[in-house]
Image 1 (tube, rainbow, N blue to C red):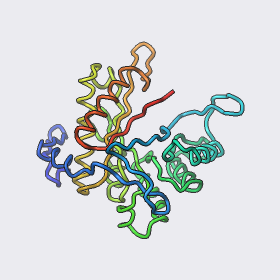
Image 2: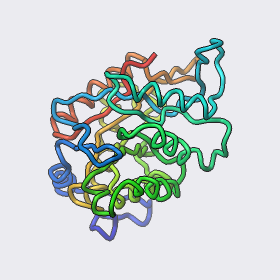
Image 3: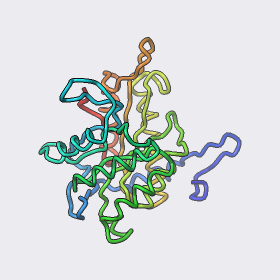
Amino acid sequence: MEKAGLPFNSENNRITFPRSVVEQSIKSAPETIKLFDRNGGHFSTIGGNQTNFVPASSALNILDWKTGERRRAQTSDFIEYIKVVDQTKHIAYPSTAFSTDDIPQDIADAWRLYMVMAHSDKPIVTGAFTHHGVPRMARMMECFRKNQNEMVEKPMAVFTCCPNSPLRWGIDSSHNLIDCVEKGIIVEIVPVLMIGLAVPVTTVGALVIQTAEVLSGVVFTQLIRSGAPVIFGGAPGAFHMQLMSAPMTGVEALQLYCGYGQIAHHLKIPSQAYMGLG
């Protein structure tokens, strides 16, 4: 980013974003994004007035539909899930909604993607768990495109990249963002805000942090490749000091979703939110 012209303070290791750079990045980010299926056909559009419902991501446990037991998921559970989602009319496309407990966790991200592509030709919402995860996952998707140019022209996946709130980018997330943009993968910037813990407890205060973190990701994507598709996302939780939990269904979190959705709409950047959670 320093090479791209952003001011860098070597004393505190901080990069700042001039207003002109941020505004130019917002202008160059596409207002709508076309998403293609495994076979290269246009499948859906993200942004504008188009709404797509997709399963959420990274559940830690599942509820066994046969026994009612709450347990860790296995590969067979994931395959059942994909088969159901692939046939559901009102679910636009699948996500890699949970990880399986029966394979090594250092390849869990790639394994989830492999299972989706093996059982569905729809686009995918997913993400990498480590800083070296995106290249191997991109190689899997390249099997369904003629060359790198077609990967860029016909993206088939949205990858989640999460800043380290507040106002930081870690090694894993920054590597993932760079790799995604270079490989032609759509990026959704998803700050995971703990309202009242790591960010202000007020809706307005949390929105300021949320917007700053997302726009930093927008700037990164556009400096790497102007016009690269990027989504304004978020995953806030309302931190409960007594219970030490941060439910994403808390009223404060839902207010934040609505707030940043309006900001994204004003900036003409496609948006994402974890809404309708149980």
